[in-house]
Length: 68
Length: 174
Image 1 (tube, rainbow over the protein chains, first blue to last red):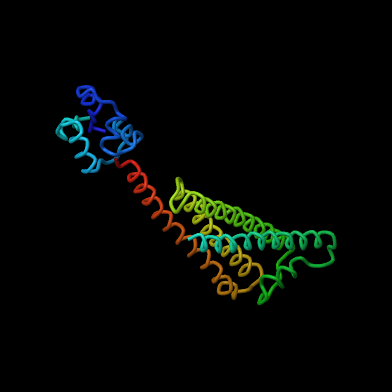
Image 2 (image 1 turned 135 degrees about the horizontal axis):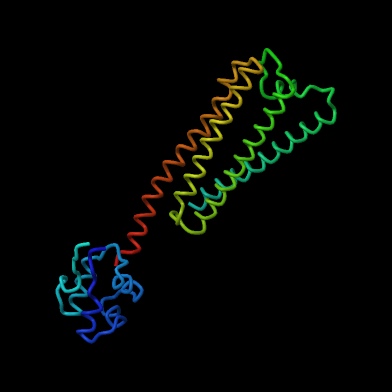
């Protein structure tokens, strides 16, 4: 998929672990893993908002479009 | 939903038993006609399936007819068993389950094929070998029953395919 998820990079920059983020934004670690591995078909605005708030970043920092 | 599915399962199980009994009766008739060759098997077929027939076909046509008739009902039996398995999966795994559309498409196309083949068999045997034109009308209700049932199942399989996709998307929405 040409949409890349840069969640690992942001998490590393913030020094936060995946399970910590999952707990903060209220989703399961399994769902967060789906998002991180790019298997997700869609992301809810509420989830995106929670991630941005928890990581203090913009949606563009997490989602990146690359041409095939 | 469970109540409706259980009723459907009961009807399908009774149909399976009915087909098995029909198969036993046909096999018994066939065996008794082979053991006692003085009784005409063609006359028996005429009496059982083509009451308004004006002619009687040869014995070989009667044997071929009953063999195909039996094979068709065995094919229908496999489709009823598949339907039973599909309903069991519905009860166990919920309204939409993986590969449901394939199961329904298989059953639906099987019913349509059975309807067409049985009608063709009765039509060809009745009109060309027993001179019974009324079979065209007499066999129509059963043909329409399985044909319409098959078409409905094919339509449901398309809806199920769409549902499966939506369910998968919903499960992969974070």
